[in-house]
Length: 213
Image (cartoon, rainbow, N blue to C red; front, side, top):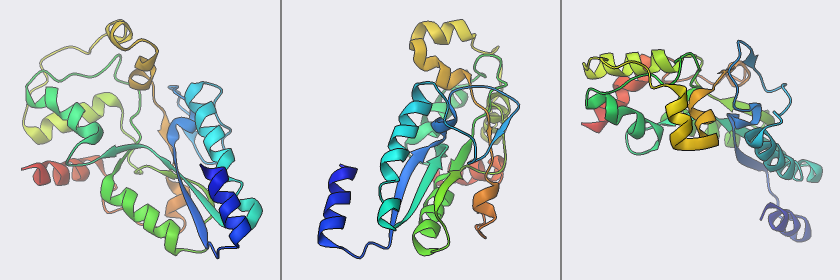
């Protein structure tokens, strides 16, 4: 599809000012480490990393046409309707919420309003080009995420963590996306002058829970 668009732009000489692409933090792979990943890191060699790399390589075709190209590497998007939060919040509301695995894996998240504003920034700011991580600056582990969610919902956390082997039996290789996660830097987008409306997880969850009512 992108090749078709590129050919159309090239042959018709359409005055395309920018090409904004949706990528993902899967670029850095499904791993848990103390490293904080920035946009300068190479793509991981696992399935997620290779997929995102191939996607972003196809986007780079527009750079060859001297078109400003931006790649937004999106984290876990939190919204009041649908998305990741709807799945995470349900067991907590039922009083059966618990962390996954050891709970130490990070969840690089972003409020949907901030994500939309990053895309607007990428469209309107002609100085922006290349890859940018779309994640909030507040790095939280799975255990911390569930605890904050339970506190805001005024629900207890009575159950032990869900063992990793149980998730592996249910989800197979896909369980890596639940059991692994690292910190992702948002410094590059902040240095452009972008300001998050919801830089902290507590405020983001309060806002989204209020909108659910």
